[in-house]
Image (cartoon, rainbow, N blue to C red):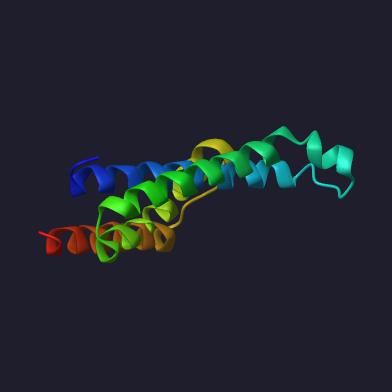
Length: 117
């Protein structure tokens, strides 16, 4: 990895993976009981944990090559991804307040990105 833009793209990938992981954890939590066999056989739950782990590995790689003050706020895009994925996969409803929050997050991340030069 040679550029800060590549580090930003890696963080965006990280946020998408962790958001997808959250969706799988939510789905897996519906089948949750605390027996070992149930936990090991809960594929959505395991998938969620794996996606979180991959996201963490990618984040560490990105942090090695970019500025923390620029990259870390981009992690807030996970809230945006979760909102969209929740609509698609969990049939959740977005009201105007939630959309206002998503737009605010996108504006904030854009301002930080512009300030990074």
